[in-house]
Length: 483
Image 1: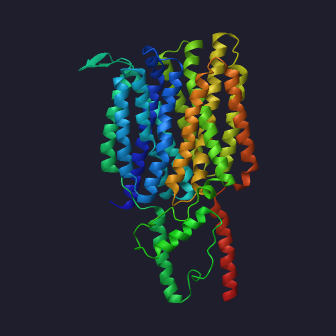
Image 2: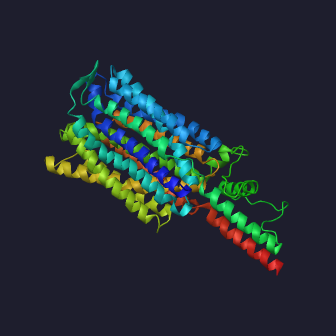
């Protein structure tokens, strides 16, 4: 089996991992509210339960990313992290108390921390021009899980039996169901996942060998002498220089590996650049708003529309269809439009959705049919903007940060998102009866990041494009001097 076949199977396995995370979210979220009520948990426990999962991912994401940057492997990390998903979901199935339920989400969240390693692998294994499309497809897999999850809920809600001393009902069955799925995934990862060498390891090494042959024939130096200064306009450029230097000592088809990818690494220089700050802020605000709305939706539909588990599951299923279509549209659009333009369009849609919700959902009037219509339009607009912002900011972030420390950088990005998914439910959980305050803050945050994006628009682009032009100019000058 060649590397391309292994890469395709590996991408397929990554898609399954993200699909399972979506399924887990979709089968647990519609029922956890009633599960906690049965255990006589106070209302704020809903926010705590949703935030606990994110807290674990926030803390473990950078650690898993650091591990992958140093080892240049992800398979072991995925197998290790999935164990926490298995244990956490089994704890959710046991559900003896509200505290065990809270702890189950905390343990399962550790498994989500491996996402930083996966995004690092995808960054190294894709070309910049195709990266947004790959990210969109992977994120669509999670949304496919959100779509399939409610279908599983249709039969999980019918469970009513005992498994030894354990009770299996519509509230505990999602836990044992997800536990079994994560166990099956372990076997899939073992047989269908490879730590294939990145594209730069294969393509750059082959190109270097060709250039060496030309160099031997023409007796003209391919690169500048060792005394020539190396340009480092961005961290990305320094990676390319390091990769080129490393490839001189590597076999033609062997992977490029640095003994210490964090040599000369500066967190302040990497993460406090204007474009990186804007993208991290976009990550925080969009996930804060998304999780706040998700926390609000279940109590809102129960109060205004009398939705039960079935109604909520069907609603999440329809939402999944919309988001999947949105991700595939963004996948198509990203081949024709710059990532920063996609980001700007997504923020405009999100602002429009928040304004709509402020006007029509905070003080609904006009009867049941009009209230339901206004709610559907608001949810539709909120979900419409999500794929635009999610794909573009992840793709841009992978391009403006260093490739050799991509795992740690993605861990930081996901930790920022994890912080947002902790604060979002906590913010919304106490304001389900005061939507003006909740939605007003969300709109203020969206306006802020939109202004930041406009002011930093020129910097939200791949540094390599600028460097390539400068390299061409330098090459042309060198050719003229040789002539």
